Length: 304
Image (cartoon, rainbow, N blue to C red):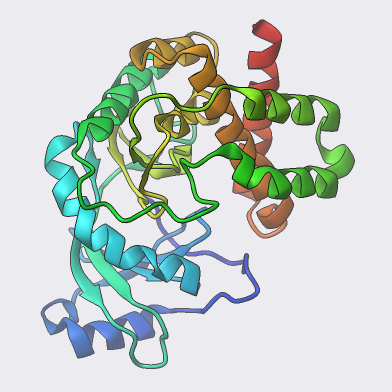
C-alpha cells in the first residue's frame, strides 16, 4: 500500500490515533499481535487511520462514528466475497472494540502489498479488463442476507444526492466549469433508472483504492461503501481511472448501455464535486484526483 501518515484533519468530528494507542488496543484485545512492528500508513482516504502490523497485517481505525459503522459489515461480508473475486481484497481477521479512550469498533485485516493506482499502472487497457472482471464477479455474488441499502448511499437513485451535488457545485463557484458540470449532472438525473436486478457494488473504485504491483492491477481495498444497489455505480472508474481507449475498453467489458453509462458518470461526478467542496483544503491529492475526474467527465461528454 503506502507508508507514513496523514497530517491534516478532514472532518470536525474526527478522532485522533497514534502508534501507542494501537499498541495498547492490541495488547488488550489481540495480544498475539501486540509485539509486531507498527508503522503508520500514508493514505489519501477520508475515513480511517491505517497502521501496518508486521509483514502481513494492518489495523484500521475509523476516524468517525460514520466510518465505524463499516466494521461489522466488512467483517461479515468480505470473507464471503473474497473467494469469488479475481483480484485480492483485504480480509478482516479480527473485530476490535472501543477501549483505552478510543471510542469506535476497529479491525485487523490482511495487508495487501503494492502501490495505489495513481500513475503506477503500466497498461491501462489491461487494467480496464482486469477491473471489469472484478466488477462482473462482484455482481454475480449472491446478495441473499445483505443489509438494506441506507438512504443517500452509493448505488441508490441519483436523485437522493441532488441537493448535496448542487450545493457542492455552488460552493465551488469558479473553481470548476459550473455550467458543464450542472449539465452533466442533469443528464445523469434524467437517465432511465436501473431496470435490472440490483447487485453488490463496491461503490468507491477510486485509484487510491486499487492496488498495483509491477504495473499490474492486483487488488482492491476499502469496502466501506459496499452495498446492494444499481450496478452502474461501479462504472465510476471509467472517469476516475481510465480515459480514451481504456475507458471504452472498460465500458465494452461491462456491456454498459447508455442509461447505465449516464448513471455511472453521475456517481463519478457526485464523488468529484463533494470531495472538492469538503476535503480539498486538507487533502491535496484527493483534490487533484477530483479535478482530473471532472476533466474526464467533460471530455467524455464532448466525444458523444
